[in-house]
Image (tube, rainbow over all chains, first blue to last red; front, top):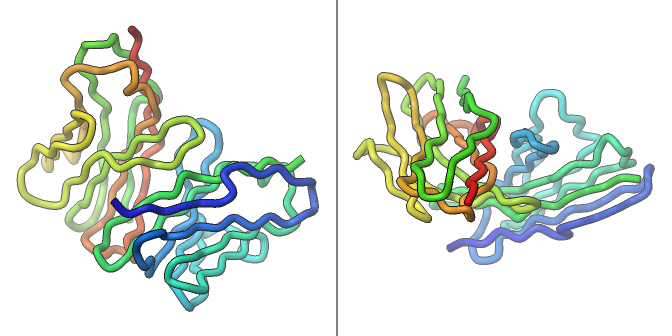
Length: 114
Length: 116
């Protein structure tokens, strides 16, 4: 089946620094990618929807300047957490869909901000 | 607007016994319903989906789910649970085939613990 890869799987950073998380569709062209945030023992919260070549659509309450999303190609979307703080520590998951409409999830990236 | 409810935070079951994880939904149109499983520090794995057709849907790892339109439910079931089924299960709904670019709404998740 289709594969979506996230990198890095784990990242630890100091408060105030920026962190970039990549989401790649390995064997299909992802016209749309979604970024989710998951707090411990909680459900997935959709942060934003990104379409290739256009600006991401953010969900209500998500700071677009804090969470920069770029979908520059049909196989890559990036989430950059700018000026990270401990409260940004979370599990971030991306998903991608292509022309078939099937949705595939990445393995997630755990961010810890010290 | 679409929403999903998973009324149980946790389900405990003995290995070999039947497993049921409950899910109810609310959509304005025709529901597209999904079940995913998540293991610790991992992404979501697709189990099964209901789009149309037979109300009983069979999926991966011996799981199945029954779509009940009158009760707006889509409960996940497995006749005989395994210890390896212990994980976090999410029900999700999409309102129609292309609602908001494939946007899914997830339930709160149900943790399943299968004891040997």
